[in-house]
Length: 152
Image 1 (tube, rainbow, N blue to C red):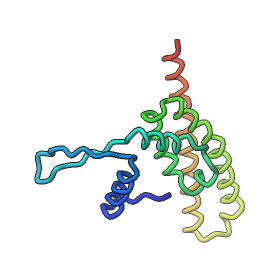
Image 2: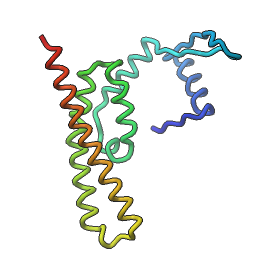
Image 3: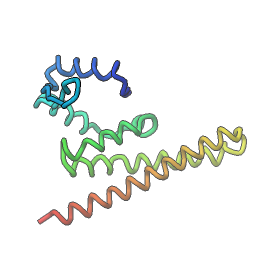
Image 4: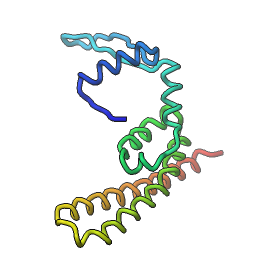
């Protein structure tokens, strides 16, 4: 899955979602030259969103599309609730840890023979995953503490 924020991609996608009955628009006056459309999910659209958000975290998502994983996380609280967010993070954490170890080992074993630009680019990747892993662990802790405070 890929995302493009260009009008040439967004408006056809919105049209397809509306044709499928997953979203509806409500024109609103924006006070400017053009009316503005505000889209909202239909019950069917919300059901499909929840189904997508509930999919297990996969290795390819960790390796190739971590941005999509973060998008899922950003939508989770409002569509499923904090418990869904915590579940997603707990599924992602061991996979992020394993992949970070793999990247570090690859850099250790192959870095000395790589061109400097390749080695430094790989180092950037390692550091990025280390940061994401630490953020994931910190966020699991934050959600866990929040749940303890709100539990009876």
